Length: 350
Ligand code: DCP
Ligand code: MG
Image (cartoon, rainbow, N blue to C red):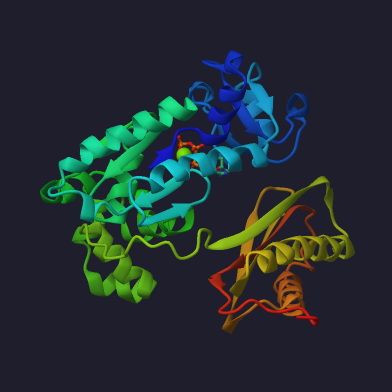
């Protein structure tokens, strides 16, 4: 299940006058001079070409008449938890991704696949009745297929892919429909290997994929053939904790960059501790004035929640960019590969 235009739809719920209008959630466009990006937009705004992740200045050019709102995460989280409560009443085996997506394992509640179509419609109806929000649901024999199906007929979609139609469903789709295939992997697949559709990928020799991508190659080969054995699990609600800052003005002073890094690490580390997480991976993201963007990550041998280590690695990862003459527009930091700490650390007085 994936909610439609989630943040934007939440705003429409709060203010029904926005219904049917191009609503864009993200940074302040400041009449086209604004910085930062679009978080999401209503389907009406998407008709103008507005997309998530696009610079807000570009969105403003495409759709100056849009209604631009800053995100209100607290409100979206509240609505999200209402949605997740509804989902939990249908199956306790659920795996939430972000605020607006969740997988449900319905195996024990159905005798055949088709039964789940009826349940999915009930879920959609209940979400709409209680919250006036539309959602899209995909049903399939595994998570990968279900997720792709959930996006197949957005908004307000319901797509059922029976096991014997998985391959014909996947075949014509673009490779970047696969979870984990982002712009970079897509580019390599398209340009180096002439692989465009999932069918191309399914027919490509597995050994060559392995050579090129390692473990990821095995994964790609399997999912292209409809195979995904990953369980629906309620382990960690979030797989990472991250945040980024777009500077008011582009910055070339690395002291400011390191200061900003400290602030990000500080804020995220508090969150990490409050949720009793350990991290095993640190990632930074840096975007220059010309929008060229780089990410770097470092994996630790063992999970930890040490703040000093995080800061030190963050700084190390940023070092290589110090000599870059371009000004910096954005800095991001992320704790990833999170796991729950086995026992809660007690305070000195416990
Ligand atoms: N989001 C964001 N930045 C992005 C992508 C998403 O801040 N680059 C936020 C805003 C979205 C929410 O996460 O409302 C959910 O992401 P989705 O990818 O599910 O996008 P939407 O729900 O907005 O639209 P869709 O109908 O395509 O699912
Ligand atoms: Mg969504």
